[in-house]
Length: 146
Image (tube, rainbow, N blue to C red; front, side, top):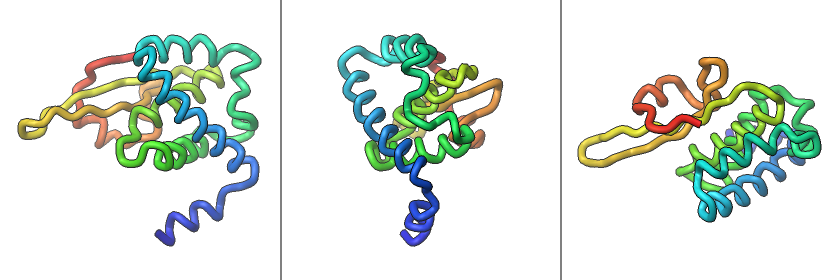
């Protein structure tokens, strides 16, 4: 708990602005996901993120390194989605990378543990796993790639 407070204390005013926008974006994406499905949402995000008037969303994101934005996306989705946040986090990272005209692939993997089917979502950019650990993603067989 104290560690979380230290993390929050290190957030600058511009990062607070970005974090609040990422929280709203995460909530909106969850609603749209239920309405139109993942494939259509990803296609829409990929097209819109390169539009000049949308690529600046969230405001001020261009001033920060993508690794820091990844931390903020993690925090935003922890607030909005709790433990089951991998898809929401991956959607945020997908948007942020596409808005910067950087390559991004959203992957969804599946794994069977005992008799339970599990899934996980993550982002890869130029062959690197983003916002997740390689150890975690290796547990899953890639099922979908966007």
